[in-house]
Amino acid sequence: MNQTMQANKQAIVLDEVFPHAPAVLWKALTTRALIGRWLMPEEGFEAAVGNRFTFQTKPAGEWDGTIRCEVVEVIENQALSYTWTGGHGDNVGYGSKLETLVTITLTAAEGGTRLQLIHSGFLLPQNEIAYRNMSDGWKVVTRRLDQVAAEDAAEQALN
Image 1 (tube, rainbow, N blue to C red):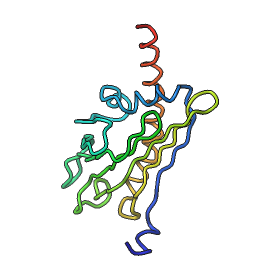
Image 2: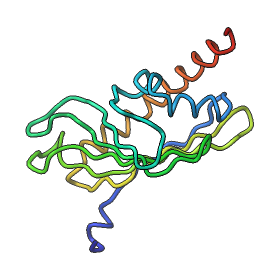
Image 3: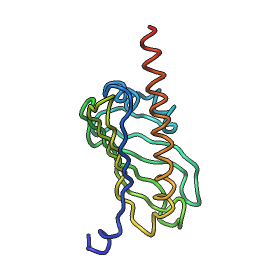
């Protein structure tokens, strides 16, 4: 890769502390039924290296809205990483070709768990719209992650 292309790559970085134990957040991050509640509909997710799965979002132009993913790292209660590929090479703007990586790390922190989410590999200007949309979108879905984790933990406490 040449230096010009490398210089144009951007990442979304979120770093927050949630009032849950790492295992509580891990369950919400890696349980199929819970992922759909905080992120988006998935098909075939399993927290196992090499597992391929998809998310479905709004189609655009030549792109059918399918986000193809592959799990590349799993360290229970600590780290989850998967590729995030979507879009189409003929699209400009929303739905342009996107080849990125989502990495989520969990570390115990005072009052709960520090979650760091890095969504890397946005090539600008081609992925400008995806970068902007997902910068805001990840903030929204991590708030939902917090809510889903809390609801699931409360439900488990009752059982």
